[in-house]
Image (tube, rainbow, N blue to C red; front, side):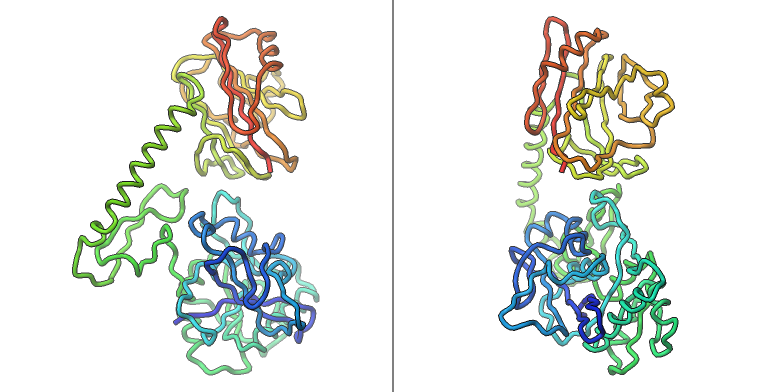
Length: 443
């Protein structure tokens, strides 16, 4: 059974409040059905979700919103950015509406309304490990009024249920005995859809870790690299999980009947082999053209706020404010390294730090020059973090088999060159000194 997924919008009164049905569509912009097109509302739940979708999803799909229960003025075309209220109470409905396969569905499918937010997580995590959160900030009359307006909009438009976080559900039902609460289960919505509509539309109560259960109850299967399970042959296959941060595999058992057990292999082996050769060629090209220096490798580590590595890559060309990161340096031979960052037109040394008092600060390094092997900058639990000052971030790494005098380093800092984005490698052959400058856009 399919469901239409919507989120209620509090418009100030029960009569003016309305619903917005969410789905994905193959199109070029976010749109309103029978309306206009535009970007998503600033700081809305839909914007939060779309920024964290996989590239294969955002390259061809956009949100489509269908407004229910709101009279639109004649000759007026609402745009997606016009329909979001304050907060991110649309977040859970938007991620589930986007994940839902609605091909062949109609406007007569049962309507499930969801007013739940999501806990913030860094964009590097994508949409993995989502945690549901309440939409009200405080237990006060205005919060209660907003929930009542949303509940009235759901009831007015014949939704089979309104899904709320447990604290929001308690607030709505505390002084209203006519609103029935029921716990979330795998069969909740299927059972509600079989019952006739009545005046006692229930509130389905969900908890912080119920995102997967809510997906299952709505018949939404978790995506596995964008391949629908219905499209897979009868033979079981080992597929990589959607979560890029989990080092493991997922075994998927597909029940679909097939008369040819090798048809899938024969159909796609040339395509897969071509991708493998292309990937190897690109990797070899990057290794040849982007290797910073003989015997030295520099890698970029995305981390969480506790400093735990999430994924590793080359130095990116751009990063957003709030990104946590570390630098991995791999030295094949023993070298002296000097690491600086240009901050407000002034060079700040990151390693080695000459101030003994710096040991009491979070970016202290236990290791000293010369170094050989693998090192993390900073080695402490606390990672680097990009603040809200946007612009260009510039680093320089100077290294040599021998210790470099301070006046020589200052001379290099004055004459080094930067690209607008990327790196530049230079050297002083006579002094056996090399240096690499990196520049990326802080947005």
